[in-house]
Length: 113
Image (cartoon, rainbow, N blue to C red):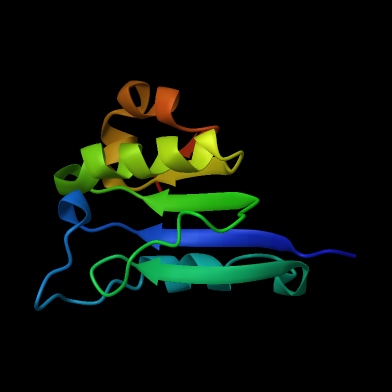
């Protein structure tokens, strides 16, 4: 059986990497919560450290969205969706403004994942 290719993204502000940043544990925690991870090929990207591999074939992408990077997160989501990737958005900004986020995703998660 072919594994689902899952991309978990912690986006940077406007796609620019920072010289110094505090690493986020959000995406590793989410990866750890996936039931039966043997069915997934999971890639975690902190865009503050490395670019998001947008041109690879992904089945599903999860993006954690903070207010300072919301616009860029929506751009990432739209790019991935245009390539056929299903996109899930979550995070504080999505919980605060779900109606703003919904048009940019196939599904949104509010409150705690």
